[in-house]
Image (cartoon, rainbow, N blue to C red; front, side):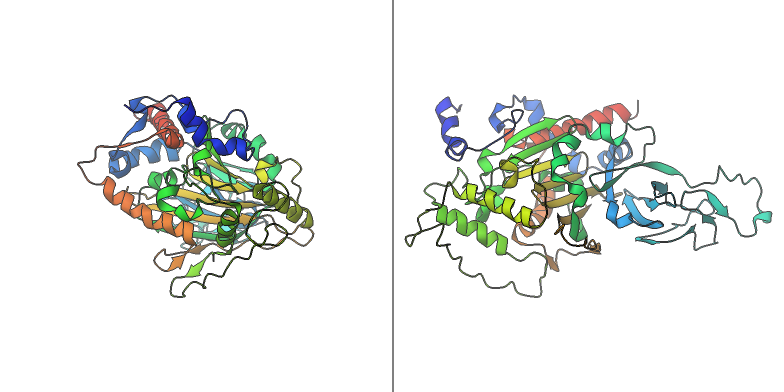
Length: 465
């Protein structure tokens, strides 16, 4: 049996001292977690079984707080947004009292959806027989009411589910007996308060269907062990090996150092790190696949940072330079980064808020994902991508990007996301082989291990007795 001695650990985490990498005390490296074999073996039917999917919908999705939309999408009185989960439809509505509520999106007469998509209205009137409710869900009108019997206005109000907000995000929970959102999120709220995400605005919101289980989609984004296999081009400026993790009950997070090379790469200089980082920034984002990507241009090394031989002459390290650039740019845009540490100005702080919300967070920028199960097919899932940023606060707030339906076959989301999207259906296809009884996880996948642990806890708590 091969073991890792203390010298191995010092060697593979050499960047920590070399670049003065910073982590809060509660974070741990992958090898610091004590795991059992049972912890690390996940049966493959968790990803492929219709019975498991039905159980998850009832015991997790009908019991948890989940991201519905952004507040700016329902900012005006009468604004509404339809949120769908596992075959159910709910309406988030801004009432005349400016309060947000979430209603069961079903006419109390014959069941038709009252509204679909998003928009604004001064009433919630069903388009089938014209029954109508106010923006607070109270019954307002029944045409030809005299031909109906036993109609009590209070009993025929629209059904409500729990609704609350945090950091500009609107959450809903079908379980009205749930704990408050603030209690559910716990320490996440204080940890992320300095980022001022309520001021962020979306310049991209795309939704698509993916041929994989909803958990397969999430799991691809909550570990960095796959970087060497799927995203090798980012290794010169992302130290996947020195990722540290924190388990916070239902939720998890990790920190990935940016601006330093992966410990898996030997003999790389600051010029290569800089060039790789700049090429990544220049990569096109959203693009129609019928249009070829622009040609790659050469990265020029700034004369104040590198000499003619390509050697680093800047003050401190390249990582220090990136931190200074972020702070200077933020100040020019009116951003307040005073509550953020140096590492938060450069590193990737990645959160998973159970069950469906996970994101890469940087000073002034957020790449957000949401995964939801297909209502009946465990081999499919619904996936959303938001790209949010803090705009120039010296100018009027921009309008948020409109949500659009995307098709991965026709739309490119940039190199890194395209690599992930191409990989996911192949993972699902492999999981369907009956000869593969379980997947095997390691310490670098501790967040996935915790994810399944929490799913089991919800199943035990809310499942059939």
